[in-house]
Length: 343
Image 1: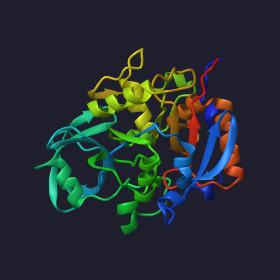
Image 2: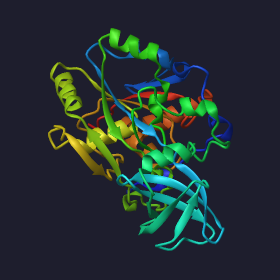
Image 3: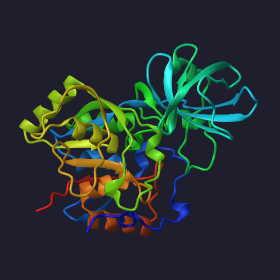
């Protein structure tokens, strides 16, 4: 029988949705799933859960100040959420307004500059900025916390809603599995002989869009741009050659690697776009273990981790996490999952 949206639903008590980060990044809890067994650990214990010669692959994308407020020429309010930077002075964005703005109209943004609406691109709008888009967004925009965090971003979020290794602006949501890493933990991982490599996948606002079809095979995945550097592909090949494991830090790193892999698992180096939709039955070619946070019911990310860890095992893990009061979503706790290969 085809998988449906209801296969990925679960009842989450609202009080388990983390509204703020813990004081210490690596103090988050870590639920380990391997061989069908669950183990409660703490994230700072990660080095002991990996082996010398393993390789962590992290997404170094940096969150933009992608939420901007403004008004139309008529005076009507508009909220802009950047989806993707298209070039030096253009971007795709979601716009919320009482009436959709027309192509050719201008929007006054944060009472600081005007953008021109060039037209529609599906559910998004194409905007032209009067200068370098990233610079203007960073100077005048606001940090876009996820919609399930029911408060405005404040000063601590400026640091804590970024990974400590973020370096390439472009995301509208943090690659949250990486939020648990701090400098002492990275030093301990490297001292244990665990390698670290990076990819870049800029997370778009589409990551928060709900799945609107019951038969998940009918869902159309949003597109995201990613980059696999040559040194990362070389590090992965060397790790595999010596029998080490590839550990993706987050679903974005996993999607980048699996999208870049050919049938043999060899990675194509460079930039590309992906609309890869990973659901149970997907054949993973690169990633052996996955570090990830807990994901929303009925979300494409929950479908991905169910494909990776096995549907029954992930359901059991989520029941365990709720019973033991784990913290969910972006500022919540994490899982370390071994790949479940169907036999």
